[in-house]
Image 1 (cartoon, protein in one colour):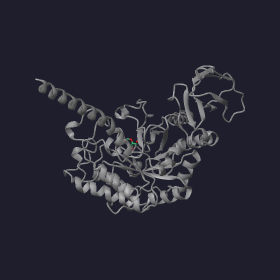
Image 2: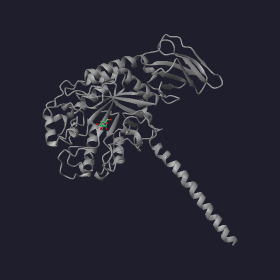
Image 3: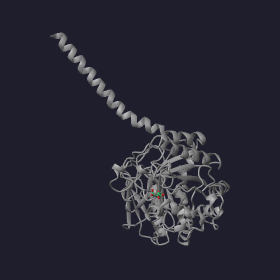
Image 4: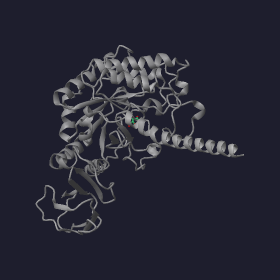
Length: 457
Ligand code: GLC
């Protein structure tokens, strides 16, 4: 009897120990996989950059109806292919694009090397469906890469995973691209080999490529096709492990992002949020499955009007003020803003975008110090604005003044507080016990952003 009891107690102890071990493992595993994503010190530039230019451009631009035009207008591949005979962006000037980004205060450019329509903007050996076989006949990526290197702007390349043109892409697994008129079932291994060969070209022939930005992961099996695009786990095996390894082997500092709308996967170097500030989930639900990574940098991409690729009927331009607010709020979350332009078929960026970028540049040259190289504030962005910080210096950005006073509880005693870059006195007081501080905003606040710079002890 005594023996039986001992065996029972022993089994109970083993059971409890197993449970503890299992729970410990469950807690550790995400940490281990996140540590795989721990930040590379050579990626510091990205954290400091805070602002980049997204450019959607390619053969689709000819139709002036957004980069999805092949799909939305249900154009069969055989007809779409004819665009190659008329795409002639002879006003494209790489130096001008890069200068425009730089003048706006942007530190990097993310450019569509190949979008969903499969058209390659460079001299690829893997397919004739590329820029060299157009009347233009010049390698756009070569010009852009050379100019970015010359002007010290980083170049990131957008690369579409899914494909609406190639026969080896197993289009039957896709939820878009079904109007292309393809009949073959595809050859997945051939398609993966094609992508690897293209990425190898991009990462060996153009000098430093600061990042690869994947998009279109959300393809899936036909029976899964329900609900809006982009909300579900992909069922396609993209061979991400091999592809990410290849990229990091070719250029160890090349940063990988994937706009898959999921939490970051191992091997990814920054996390992309589409039309949504991290965690806000207000941009149509793209980020409802994304938890914010604590270990890799964040980036939000957004359009100046609505479309990514040039769309001649899209007149819903955001104001300069709205765009600056977006930049500040993104920085308040510790994220970069990747702001998009879709150049016209000639290669020119439309005036409405140029004006806004110029005006943003005026602002960043005066106030950029409160954005670049900062981290997320001690509180999340609020309806009234956002906080960014650099060590013991806090920048309080009042974007939408809600009253004549702003009260905030600081993590420490305030040493000094003043208006940033404005010769206006600031009245403030702090409760010594609670560290709650109140700033008076009743005098000459700024139209766009009233910035208070606070030093703490
Ligand atoms: C979406 C669009 C795609 C665009 C991307 C940019 O995934 O489908 O066309 O390139 O957003 O974030």
